[in-house]
Length: 404
Image (cartoon, rainbow, N blue to C red; front, top):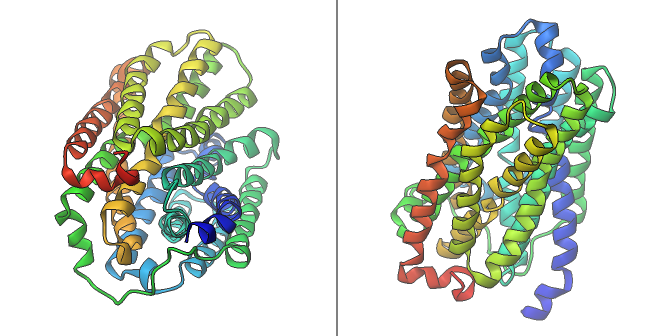
């Protein structure tokens, strides 16, 4: 089995990582062009935040339907990934071609999020079928690719067309290619299980398994911080660099680099987690990112190099642990319903992000950028407590072949 696993798993990792990167570029395709949309559609700050919130809520709805129906476990995961990516690209293209108002634009972003529910959790399941040893590293690479994908619209906006619609359409083309790569070149690995039977009770069993439950609580603390950071850090960077007289293109490129730094963090955390333990690495990453929450606001308006250095450390650490929570679920849960467990985890986590995303602009209006991000710090703090509690359980020895 080890020989079979080793034969094609790195090729599968490279291809699936490329597919995830391209498909997940849809996520922030509207957020990246938010300044142009605000001017064209006369949007308020609250309305602008809905360009991201709608994707989050659509993703929650999609993952909820997927989990309740056991969809990633009863049909071909590869085909689900491909169809969802291409459908999401089509909806995003409609946003670029036909959206001329806030209401219609938000509806299309919601549908895009629903489609992406068929990309992210199934992608993790496919990767887990290729890797038993080194699963943390593999999932780290996958989430790193996903992170670069989510950052890519900012790069497209920085170097692409002055017409935001052209940039949105270009991102849709990237996502279509990602779906085709998954469909044509990626298959299930040697650890894949046979298609499972529908079992509605699997949704609740995820929370009755105490090891999976604690891994999920760690993930929820991580998610409280992650998407609020990804959504609002670029806004803060734009405002801070503008106050220093820097050109808008620098802010877009800086936003790409800050979010994209998470790809390095994911790979590094994956390599470490497979060697020193998942609970240790996730706790360290959340401690570092939580510290950045408390510090970064004080650098608003400071020298750009100092702000971007701290923001890049935050960007690398804030998502570094993400794949390891998913790896824990695949190792501690029922392998027959791995896709359902991962989908439930992401569904609940992304639902939580809708609260923290809305909270930050309220705090910015009340206390300014200096203190607003501090409200995210309790998330990683609680996440650390959950992962340390998981470390003390006897079933934690199942994690990373004993490297808990």
